[in-house]
Length: 161
Image (cartoon, helix red, strand yellow):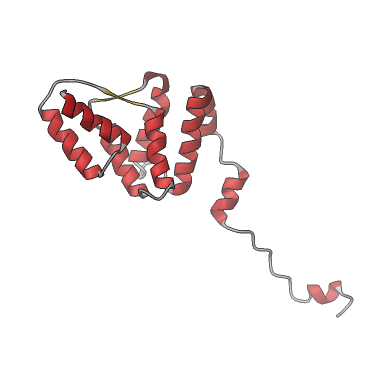
């Protein structure tokens, strides 16, 4: 692949620009050149997830990006994190088979991806297998609302009725 094709692939895995333009550019460059591979790494996946968490992209755009990266023949997955990154691309690109891509799913993947680069793939797999921490569940439910008092219970507590 020529320099233009390499830049197109790099822009795609980095998600630098409008996704439809990136895929169009990558497709046209593919027809003009040979086989230069671009390596997809955990930092690419983490940056894409951060875009959603920062409000710069919505989850459906992340799905489209993951599909484009996953099905691009000239994108190679970093060998050290191949299982994790393949799982990321498959799950994010096919939410109909796994779970819908939400901000919470993005937070979970960001944690897993950061763990993979911090201390090896074993801890990342542990983080992926482990259910979210209790505070994650609380945040998903919203603020705590105490239950309403039972009728007559307040009077009984104050010596009435």
